[in-house]
Length: 456
Image: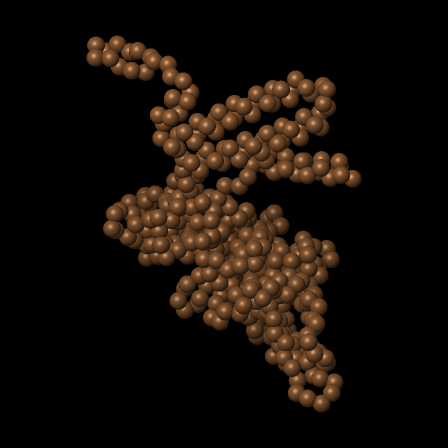
């Protein structure tokens, strides 16, 4: 279209090649991809004409091949135009910058605590901030939360559920909320055990009316310990609260064993150590294991194991040390040399977000972070993880991971952001990594299955 001096509009037709040549490189790429789409759809029409002759299975396979081609071409078109970027949240209702929020594991709910403010916290959900009058443990959506209130000489758990508060008939000395499940139906409370006078953790489960005491936390041990007063320390829980793991302690030899429980498994999920094949002979003595991390899906445990071997012939005893991975589906295995070295880093706290594919190590003193990809068997930085996922980090540095959505797609954290040329501030960020479409995945599976049928 062209506007002449007298205001008249004339339209001059150009060939497709002339038009494409006049566009920027990014637009040319998109145009070429849409030309490719047109050819693909013409092929689909040709396949439909031959459907009665070839049969439905052949047609379906070819359509799936074309769908794969469409997906690849679509990705190429998208990547030519835009790149993923770390996202921030809008300012709070009072105009204060929202820079210290936390993302919940649903990947779409965010909380910013307001210490020293009349408003305890703000929740960002469905595109806006809402003021909240509490800042304690809560369900993902923030509609169920738990705190502690005095109850005579002891303390009790108070739960507010859908706007209604109730103080539970569960009291202990020095009681505190340990954790709450994402849906709010399970609460873990830790307090003084009147029998052993040690800290113990109890499970409180919602029965439709109130929360009932489901018993003290105790799991299936990884290995046996000498008889003694057994105490379960500092359990880690899964996101839905149905699984937990921790260290069970015996005062008979000051030893510990990793213990695990799955409420949904009947009977309890087996939890056994990996086979030990040390390069020496001897009698196994003094086994010890300790939990490093439980995945948020509750299906993966990472821990450390040690044992002393007394030789059958004269000589000094030998010590065996190693790190292990336990998977509810595949059992237990020793960590690879690379992962073993990563897990042996001194002064680090370890977490297993989402399904446990990645291990995050955080230095307790410096706060620096590193990651390990168990599937790829290699360590990498936060920046490397985001960059290889297609995220633009040109205005960000000093990144730290904060939380990971349960589906593994949305990550959040903090970093130093250049919000204006030459001006920097600490800020919180999140980003959602796109995944291949369901149709793409189903077609890929169907093609593989078809090939297997033909080859069998």
